[in-house]
Amino acid sequence: MKRIHSGTAICLGLVCLFFSFFISCNNSNETKESPAAGSTDSVQKVIERGKYLAHHVSLCMDCHSERDFNQFSGPMKEGTEGRGGDYFDQGVGIPGVVYAKNITPDTANGIGKYTDEELVRVITTGITRTGDTLFPIMPYPHYNTMSKDDIHSIIAYIRTLKPSSKKIPERKLMIPVSLVYPKLRSASLDSNRKPDVSDMVNYGAYMWNAAACMDCHTQMDEKGFVMSKLMAGGRKFDLGTFVVTSANLTPDTATGIGKWTEQMFLDKFKNYRDKMAYASNPGKNNSIMPWSMYANMDDFDLKAIYRFLQTLQPVNNKVEKYPPSK
Image (cartoon, rainbow, N blue to C red; front, side, top):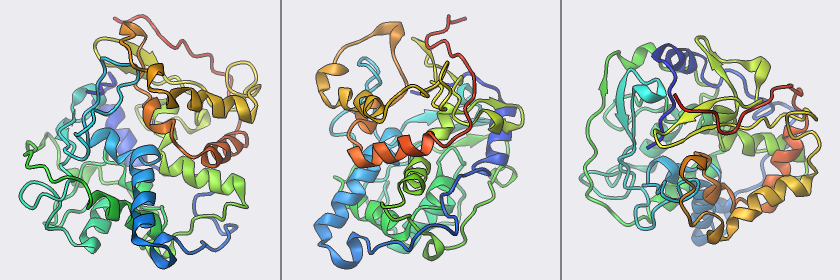
């Protein structure tokens, strides 16, 4: 279970400002999106694209599956894909407790009765088929700006998951979700555009947004994200058994990744493509960063994210990776 020992006030600030600042994800300089798999490729390619996004970019399987923190970075437990059950409480600033839903095609406790249109709505706006509103720890404001083809690819994939009858507990909130519902940037997926891969920086910004990198690598205060420290790291994560701080990924040469080459950035992820890199219990030197999932992001996509990160404002912010626990 992921626990971030911040306060409820921080959470409220977060959800009020959630994603108010995105760079180049949908700007007018983007080239027209090329046809995605759903329009010209086989159904299998659409599903494979959705699996890639769900496992290695947007990380649907991060929260909606079970992770094993007896191994480094908590790799997903095989066979738990989409079953849900992970919970988030006041340890992560939630005014109450919410649970990750069962998103397998089970018709009783999963999404088996959802139409594609209903799934689009819940993924990109947080509104369920019954009209309920999801608490915005579910990153639907991120997905709200993704391309129509990518969202439909994710839907195609999760429909292939093995149905699970696992029943998820009901949330228990101390405030109505309407008080913290974030402002969404896109009214329709039809208006969203994924930059062409030839525009590598803007394409990298798109993938960076889809991967929700800023959520962990940007500090917060009582008002929400500290945008002057975008991607400068310093957010502390306390899982009870270990405490770890997110890294500075700005191009600052002293405290960030300003001296990193593109290959160095790529290799950092590629190192975790071998299961032996995380098949051990590091104890207090563990990480909440899901390396085993992000590691299998496509090399080009990782390079594009690196190119985008190099365009950010450098922030001098020295991070202590493993701070002492209280």
